[in-house]
Image: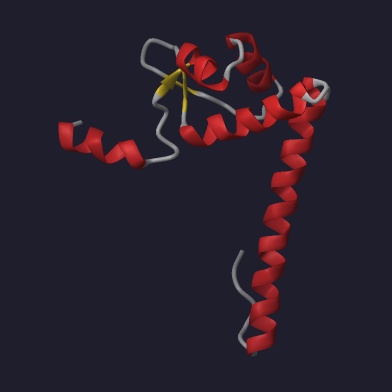
Length: 112
């Protein structure tokens, strides 16, 4: 990878740029919290060549949402399930909107 390739990834929300320690610090939580939401399969951090967990900005946003719910008293497993269900609902609503637009315009149904 060249330096130009590395700089291009600075804007990539899916690039695993953050170590567990840095991610925990940014979220104001513990590394154990990040491991717990990983074990609950809310997020799956990528691994560096040395086997260390690396998190993307997108994953940190999901972890921040989990932390909000846990801070409000929701058990971690329930918080993870809530976030997964919220994501599924959002995707279903997006698909329904695409079908609705296609039906209203008389076009064939979109591929999903």
